[in-house]
Length: 402
Image (tube, rainbow, N blue to C red):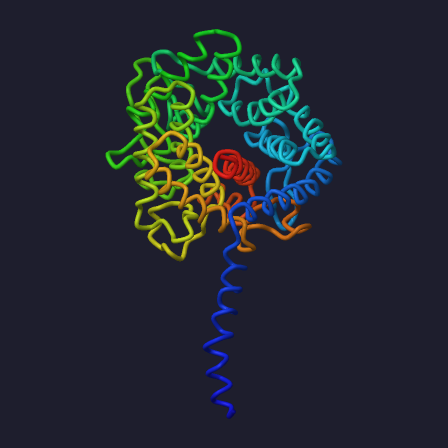
């Protein structure tokens, strides 16, 4: 048999086998992807936990100048890493992970009395909320209720929203950012635990007023709306972290999607699900959403596609879509989950997941915190890791185990 015949035989018989094997390796089952990703996250987060525990009173923030950047408990992201550890403890039942989750959660305890921030949902509910859910310790419940009371002091009934920031008062009289939707789950929990109707009233009023004023006709949202505290009138519509006042800042769209899906879960009010579905349509049908479904940091940056991605926005969107898939019809659920599968496979790949022992112990690479200020740009972020692990656990619970 001449050489040409051997090549023909290879092409007919062996090449298809090689191709199938190669494809199978690339296209692992979602169950395998999820399990590998969670195990990797568990091992990587243990490294970060050991490193940051050695720094008294500190919590991880990001990487700056090639080194671990930390914060005190009053930084708005302080609760995310303890919350990630609690999620991983739920997955692995690893006592060492649980030990570090407890130690780092307790570093945030004093924030229960902090009335100078709207971010207590992120700070306390992600940490102590998960701690209470998994351990049942009564002391955690009292800390959470105190924090919910502190958060409620930032509510103005004339405006109908929780005040976000206290800075730039010349520019914003009463600023409300779309991120603030994420605090409402905390207050809805407090309502269910205490029976205090005020917590629910604040949540519902804030969600309704945000729906009324923070969205454009295409269901993209403004980052910041500033109201008159005396009349409740809208004074300014704009951005602080997005590309421009009229652009669609990607993480803002993610907060909105997650927030209204959550409000439907908590209230069963159909209008919140309708809102969440419309926000999802804006994101998923956007011509500038990349094929791997990890958004550019803003949908309207002129230099797209030569623009940084935001893994944190992708992780938040994935987690929200998994939850929404439980509330919608079968065809819509499949459309959402097809996107989620692409997002998780992308984030779990070496393109976004850091190798064990690198990235200072953070799980994901390539998030964008505050691009315009040059802060946490193309860097790891604790909330990217938190919502990524949450998405992995939700997929395992709602999709793989059903």
